[in-house]
Structure formats: C-alpha cells, structure tokens
Length: 294
Ligand code: FAD
Image (tube, rainbow, N blue to C red):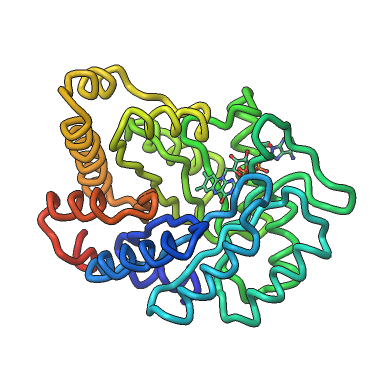
C-alpha cells in the first residue's frame, strides 16, 4: 500500500524496522520474528540499507521476499552512498517491477571510519534523491529521515530545519525520526517542523535498549542521540542483563504510551530483527493488535 494511504487509514501507523540477515539461518530467524509479530497487524515494515551501501542485494532480496511471502507493506531504505544516478535508477526500476511502492530516501552512512563523499555522477544529499525519485517514479511513496536532537554534521539547528523542509518540498510524503529516549525532544522537533511549514506525518523512532552492548552501539550509530540521566540511572540500577532488559523495555513502553497520548502519526520500532522486546511493549500497553490502539 502507498504510504499516504497508510497514514489516511491509520489513526497511528505502527511500523517495525528490520535489517537484512547475512545467513540463511538468520533469514529463517527473521521470518519467524515476522510471523511472531504479525498478529500486531502492522501498518508497514521497513528494511535498512547497510552503511556504505554494503547490503544492497541483501536489502533487495529481503524486501522482495517480504512482499512476496507476507501481507505486509514494505518500505525499502535507499541511500546515495557509493552509487551513481544510473545505478540508483536501476535499483528503483527493479523495485518498481517487484511491486515495491515505498522508499525511505536517505543520504546514507559512509563506510565505518570514512566521511561521506558523493561519487561522481551521484547524489550529495537525500533531498536530491527525493527529487529524482519523485520525477522518475511519481507513483512511489517517499519517506525521509528527521533528527529530533539534530544531525551531528549540521550544528546550525535553524539551517537543519531548512534542509529538512527542502526534502519535504522535493516530494517526501513523511518523516521518520532517528531514535530518541526523551519524548520532549520529539515534541519540540514536531513543533519546529510546524513552524518551518512542514506538514507531512512525522513517525517517532523508538528503540528498546536490551543490553549495555546495544546501548553503546546505539550511541555510536545514532550519533547525537541523548541518553537522559534518569534513563542511565535506571539502567545502572539493574543488577544484571536480564533486569537491564526489563528497564529498557519499560522505558520504551512508557515512551510509546506517552506518544499515543499525544496523538503521534506513527511509531516506528527498531526491532533489531527480534520479536521479544516488541511483543513485551505491546503486551504492557494491554493490546494484542495495534489496529485499535489510539
Ligand atoms: P541528508 O538529509 O541529506 O542530510 C545529511 C547532512 O547534510 C545533514 O547534516 C543535513 O543537515 C545536511 N544537509 C542536508 N542538505 C544540505 C544542503 N543542501 N547543504 C548543506 N548541508 C545539507 N543510513 C544507512 O546507511 N542506511 C539506512 O538504512 C539508514 N536508515 C535510517 C533510517 C532512519 C529513520 C534514520 C533517521 C537514519 C537512517 N540512516 C541510515 C542514517 C542516515 O543515512 C545518516 O544519518 C546520514 O548521515 C544522513 O542521512 P539523511 O538522509 O538524513 O541525509
């Protein structure tokens, strides 16, 4: 389903993020996760594109398999990293032929330890990719990334909103945010979007922290994200990894509950291909399906 239809037909659109598995075993595990989460009746799932474009084929294979084997709507992430316009066009052609209707258009993370540099004949910013998709694939639903706590490469937070607006003006249908642990950051960001004249739905990115290792990884890949002192204190109080997981899931559940109370357009859970934490969040909200959760 086209993303604009999804937002029209859901009071709050619940979605999950998946990443492409690297082995057959991990792939079967992922499909078990998808099956486990299917009673929640999600609005869509999105599939990431590895840093530096490293999972291009794996992303494509997973997106197409989900499209073929499940009833889920899939949003495929696509980045500008390491690809010329012609290469991006050929990826988009394949997606269009496979019936993929939605793309999350990103500039992308460079390979580890490198800074982003556009390839000759490629795109420098996500806004350029959005404009390209809108021009050549007008039927596609397009999402873009937003950063409630700011993107580390643009310290000027006013200018950053102009760049976000440029992505929306180029043709984006919605914004999905970077993960955050303090909802006030999201509410303030939403207000700043409103002030900037951005009128598309904004989906809140929520990640349950289930271990110290994961927290450290999140701090690295989502640079700029604040871990509030209250949260760190609660995590530190946990006596072992099991309790830490409970604390992380509790925190994420409270975030989701509060976002629902604030009539957010969508909630995107970073599942890390596992169903356990996600199921516990919805169980704690008291529901078995997200369909009527408003
Ligand atoms: P842009 O919007 O192009 O912004 C990049 C930087 O340039 C920002 O600092 C911005 O403020 C600045 N900028 C924008 N326009 C201009 C301009 N005209 N002039 C000067 N500066 C400008 N990465 C992956 O590799 N694969 C993924 O699957 C992936 N999924 C993601 C999903 C979500 C929901 C989010 C929030 C991020 C995801 N990322 C992913 C990370 C993202 O690719 C990085 O944060 C990347 O550094 C920026 O991508 P962007 O699309 O926000 O870029």
